Length: 463
Image (cartoon, rainbow, N blue to C red):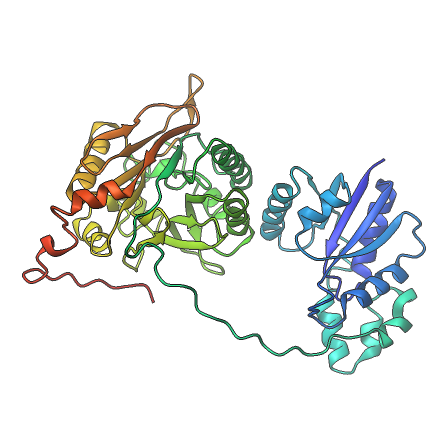
């Protein structure tokens, strides 16, 4: 017996929805139409119970279909209903639907998504259009877009009463001021991505986060540009003849929009496993064409704590990525103040100074660099500032069964604590920033020892 789940808001159910349900009912033993809504705090035009009643009426001729109201996420409903597959519409935004499929698979612990074939004759219909027609008083036009069986019921279905806007409150202040902070277990993921395949790489990242967290990690870090992979064609050859095939189109199509389902699922993974997740992405602004090399940091609360764009793409990187326009900022955590400098930004003295002036304790420095010079740069940064530094270089491929990337953790005196090496999954180390603070007590470049009375650094903060 196979069970298919077709989730959505269905506000209200329309002919396009019915077409998908009828298609799914022919393929599966049972189809569950999941109506998303909170009966206690309803939103939209129709109440959740009214939407469920309309959908039930519209599908009454299909004996293997039932409609339920749920609150929460689709993945949890899929597990509750023992679904074998989640049904989604194929004619909607393809990029969004791919990301939602990965999100639902993660949240449901493995339930795949099956895309219903599109019906060109119904693609113009949407719940938004039905609601707009009803709101304008054109009930006849709205009725033409919904199943005939529910047309009479549509006119009298209970609607949501307007709700007063909730007032927000600002969050608490810095978490680490004036007290010792907790020790931190770091895991640097060095497995290669599924090159230029964002969704498969996201799937891999989720499994690595789960594995690292299960083994005690509290911060999981991925290399620069991990999603969907570092554009290897930008290095080592003359322009127009780069050796590695130029796949800029693939990079663009697989770029990550901050706030999309891709970043939502990463935030949910961080929250589910109670870890910080730092991951490099090629970022695209929604609706724009420019790409940026960004390192994202997600917290155990499921928040996107920082989006640090590469400030100075080097060489032919500048043909692929734009320049970040905001100075780096630290993130206050229970483990100390964390800052990020992706790529060769770690070699920019003023960028490092900007973070040091904010009380930096731990620097995340993902890059594509490798070799002795890479290690020397990170050791110097740690020693200079009296901080911990975590590095990860890009793993573009597997050679002889071993990932071609590496990770490293360096203490505040410049001593290597873990790595570098071609590990199969993670480079691990414990980090206690209290040690770094004790060391900076004698010389703090970002504090009094930096001689702010003689030197001045002006920083352009994010808008």
